[in-house]
Image 1 (cartoon, chains in turn brown, orange):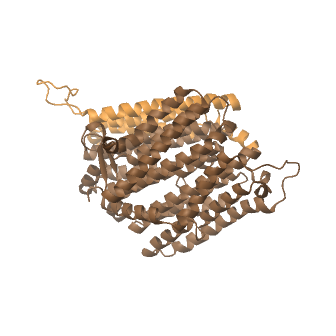
Image 2 (spheres, helix red, strand yellow):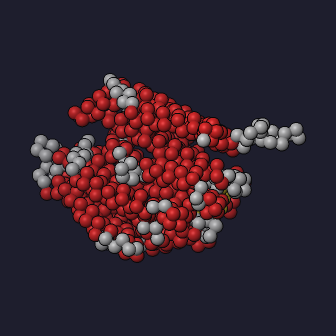
Image 3 (cartoon, one colour):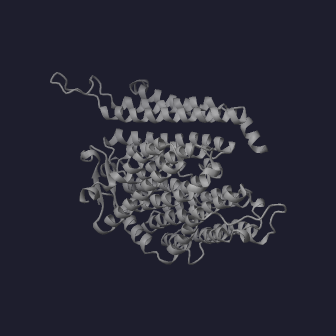
Amino acid sequence: MNTLLAHLPALQVVVPMVAAPLCLLAGRAGLAWIIAFLAAAFATVAAALLAYQTLHHGPISYAMGGWAPPWGIEYAVDTANAFILLLVAAIACVVLVFCRTSIPKEIRAGREHLFYCMYTLCLTGLLGIAITGDAFNVFVFLEISSLSSYALIAMGGRRKSLTAAFQYLIMGTIGATFFLIGVGLLYMMTGTLNMADLSARIPELQDSRPVLAAFAFITVGLALKAALFPLHLWLPNAYAYAPSGVSAFMAATATKVSLYVLLRFTFTIFGSEFAFGNLPLLWVLLVPAVLAMFAGSFSAIFQTDIKRMLAYSSVAQIGYITLAIALANPAGVQAAMIHIFNHGLMKAALFCAMGCIFYRIGSTRIDQMAGLGRQMPWTFAAIVTGGLSLLGVPLTAGYISKWYLVQAALQTDLWWLVILIALSSMLALVYVWRLVEALYFQEPVPGREAVREAPLSMLLPTLLLAGANIYFGLDTRLPVAMTENAALLLFQGPGG
Amino acid sequence: MLQEILDHYNYWIAIMLMMVGFYTVVARGNLVKKIVGLNIFQTSVFLLYISMGKVTGGTAPILDERFTVYSNPIPHVLILTAIVVGVATTALGLALVVRIKESYGTIEEDELDLMDGET
């Protein structure tokens, strides 16, 4: 048992990685699902154990393959990435339950096992990005998760899924290659790829041009992967035309993991002094973040496809997270991490609820949904909860995010940001209300047969995610304790 | 000035290829040409890494008394991984192009946009 615990950081990634080809070999949907679910459940338990260990016993350093860092690849787990691991694994696990019923209806028959193979591979990549302490390893896992997500999106069944996946492939590859250039330049100057080593060596190279270029390449590359406005163009189509389970999983985790890497590189590796003191990163991030908050919400208001609307809303929410990062104080970093977590919960709940609706009526267009709220009360309840959380209404997780974000903004001299945050939340009210109005107050589409509530196997995960939005709005101990510690760690750097 | 450019010719080649590839991705409407551009773009980064590890007069890193100067193998090994990633990306990209051709009947971006606008 103790050896198992000692190797937990490796198993966290290796188990889903081994599960992926097993799903492929299983050849049948049922068996592949069981394998994928066991892997995701294991990853969740492992992430929870790691989170417990980091919270109570401090960071863990694991030498992959027994090669001591900085020569070998180090898996460095602290509260910051344990928190991300927990989010990714838990969402993957819950959404997988949802997929069991929803996927056969959304992808070509006989391909379910391929879907689960890609899904676990994507999970592997995302967990790997979060856990590794090696800059090049981040690139490798980034590509593992990206390549599998291109395939997942293309499985969406509509022909637009293909063009959406292609668009994402082009932009995602450019983003990842930018990141690779940045890591290469850093290696050239410092001779190391280990994150702790990098952060120790970069201060003396503050003014060297390659390091500055590396910083620019890494920031832009990650902003592309995180879909920061105006680099978000791949996101709306990708989320709108992917199978609903994939939309839920990716909206909650994929962009979030990139934002985590951005946090890690900006604050730990380069240091806030370098990024915000010597360079105007504040404005470089703040302006797109504010534009994202407004442009994303505005675009969301005018969408007829609700999955697209939610995707644009994600662009706006990523704006909030980036805004929190740009504040460059520990409170801002904490707010960013809290919103990464809470936004994952709300978007997963909302996309799952859309999946339930799609399962029944075969569409996610708003005009087709009229009056559905009364026929599918539980799904409707999940949508309302997710929507309220998105707005930041008290007693929901979204309120906690907004609260920390406003607190962090007030600590700087950028108090007027609070007004902008409030204004853009009003826009969110418009599009959430539009959805609620269509679902509940409009008469059902004439000629459409009354539908039943979504099957229990889809409803339960949806309600679980919606319930989590309430739970984490009331009991904030876990995210607050972890992010408080994480913000401090990110600021100090791993050696500090 | 000229000497400075010539001394760092590997970087200039990498930058030129990078821009050629990037321009092709952005400017070409044909999806296959976009993939070709993406490949050139990625290859430039491979060159950047590989030339970075080269030590003038150094041999391959073989443990032998006769050799004392080695090239740094780490960037080379790293780029081996990146090449594999590049191959996977190209394969997936081309597979998507085939599927797009099957369902749309074209692989020109402007025509695809038109058809997507109608549906």
